[in-house]
Image 1: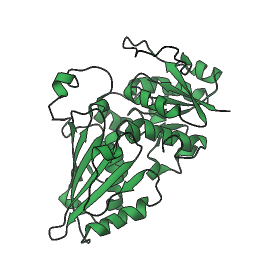
Image 2: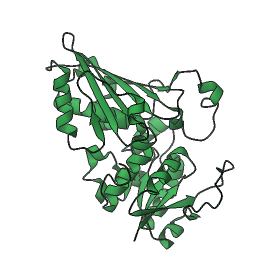
Image 3: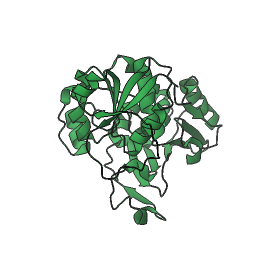
Image 4: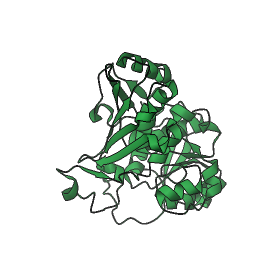
Length: 335
C-alpha cells in the first residue's frame, strides 16, 4: 500500500515539480494540501483525475495518515505549519529557508525577520544527502537546502576538505539562475519585459543563501564572495567558482579529489579535467554536474557547478530526502 505525502504550496513552481515527481513514485501517493485560495488556478484538462485535496492542517494530516508533508511555502508559512504537521506524526520536508540556519540570530541577520520556532530550528536536519545521508532518516524535520548552496557546497567542500585551496586568496562564486528560482508570485523584477533580453545581479554581498555555503563548506565569511544573477531563462543554475590552488598541479588531480568524494554518489556527475558542464546538461534532472580547470603555472582554478534549480535545487532533492526518511531507494522517481 502506497504511503501518502502531502504537498503544501502545490501551485508554485517547486510544488508543481514535486507533484510531477511523486506521481511517478512507486511507493508514494501525493495529496494536495490547500493552504489558501489562489486566483491563478491553472487550467485542467477535461476528465482530469488528479490527487485528492485536503486542508493544510495537522488534523487533516493525521486523519488521512500522511507519512510526509512537503512545505513548498514561504519561510513564515513553513514556521506556522511545521509544528502541527510534526504533531500529526508526519515527517516534514521544508523547501523554504525557515529551518536551514542553526540559530535565530543568524536567521534574523540574513532573512531580516524574527524566527518564531527556535526549538525546531535547532532540531532540523540540513538535508543535503551527499553530506548528511546518515542523519536524514532519523530526523522528523528535514530542511531542504537552497538551490545556490547545493551547487556551491557540492563543488567547494571537497576541495576545502582536501586542503588544496589557498583560503587567504579567497573564493569567488559567480552564480546565475533561471527566473523560476524567484518563485511564482508576480513581481516587477521577474516580469517578462524586465527579464527577457536582460541579465542582472541582485542581493550583492547580502544574499540569504551565503550562510548555508559557509555552514557546510568550511569557509569563513571573509573567504567567500558570492553574487547571484538572474538569467532570462526558465530554469537552471550555473555557478562559476574561482579559487587559488595550493599543493596541487593539475586539473586531473582535482578531479581525483572529487572522484574519491563522489564516486558512489548517484546524483553527482563529474566531467573530464578541463571540461565544464552547461545548464542544458542538468536541466530536468536531479544531477549536479561538476567540471574543473586549473592553470598549473599560476595556480588559478575554476570549477563549474550546474543544477536544475527546481529539481536538485528544490523538489528533486526534497524527494531524495523523503526517500531516505521513509526507507525507499534514494533514487526512486528521480532516475
